[in-house]
Image (tube, rainbow, N blue to C red; front, side):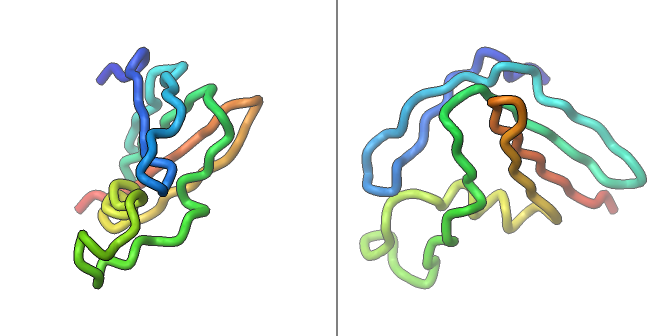
Length: 99
């Protein structure tokens, strides 16, 4: 899998696009003790997607605030997600136990 050079942008939560950034490294992928892990690293503006509250999915799309649904869907499918800021980079790791 190659994601280096992939441009990504997201919502700022107010319907406007946030700054674009580029993954600065290939994702780190592996399986250890039956747990698959993917780590995404970028050198963009510090941003912890896990610090935002989950969207209220009980509301209709028209009544719900824009933003946060993508990371929410990933959080619901993974067993663990962590974020840290290391050496001036955003580091997001997702983990899923394999059956």
